[in-house]
Image (tube, rainbow, N blue to C red; front, top):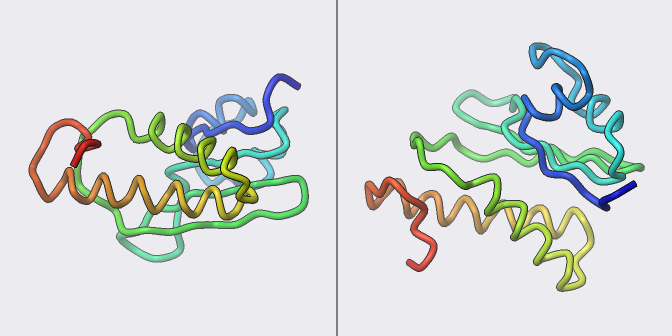
Length: 124
């Protein structure tokens, strides 16, 4: 194993697991990957107008949901990965690290959308 965690989006997770993305059990797919912790973004969410991020560890799977935001801004996956690692290095467990990182990305992305910006508003 080369890493402790991976942060693919749903398409990347399915591709890495050698599967198509439609109608997939992303918990099962994430467990096919080598890292023991996988945070899969852009997964289906039970509620309409929501998107999911699925945290899969060796012992549990947790689905985080938030409202969809209409934007074409790039870099949210990289930002999430960096914040997820930062929270983990602060000593948080995996679920707390994921929750904190997701909350921060959502706040930054919400501000970006509200400002009508075409790049992430990190400094603001």
